[in-house]
Length: 356
Image (cartoon, rainbow, N blue to C red; front, top):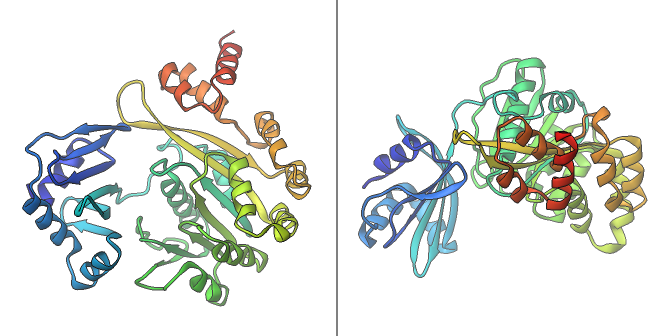
């Protein structure tokens, strides 16, 4: 089995992720569940051939040999675009490939909260965050927002990614996409000079450290709108994570800055659809109102959740309400929704309340 065959089979089965390993059958994540694609277990020579083909050039081979782990985008002509991660386990290479869709769908097609996301797209400065576990749709949500802005407004958008996933074509906006390792050495280095490039909007693929977070905050204070992603499960945890990037003696200062620049968050979880036709997002939306801004500033972040629960007037929605609505509309099984709830008891109470 070669790369073209296995990627074609992956797309034929509408899988989001592909898993290849020596002495194991090819497997794929289909509707959120890992399933066997069939065929014989991959031999050591077959895995070596696939790995060498994907690595492609001497530079990638050198990086993989040095780090035993590499992440990049691979285009299989006539098949599709894939984000490839090759790592080493038990002394041999293993591969995880994620399908990157070539076209960016709109909010409605993806069942995302269209009105509140469109509202955030109209911001001219500040910070917007998407959060969720790996593979929950964070990058897709940001791509949809960028494409919406691209269609609606004349802006200069700069993306800084590792690696570049979605490719954009200029429409009303001009979009420059920079990739770590290819176009710039690091997120902080890219952000050091970005304000001199006259951007209206900056997308930072992922913030992992204090230096990048500080640079992002500085960019918003200089008058740009910054979008980024976090591997956190909800709004409260995301704010706590940002503050904890910094040493304790700076926490008051960072909370003050966040209270002024943070516009909102959207947290995502993908659930299997009841009809078996793929997955659908449950989401939590938080809009930073004056009250929420005050709670951040006063270090009462843990008190924010009730305001999200009751903030529908401002475009907010809690995970439990989103999950219940998916169940009552017949899109998701009750059992699956309960598995994704933060609190099963609160989910059950919310469900009973809406079923009355």
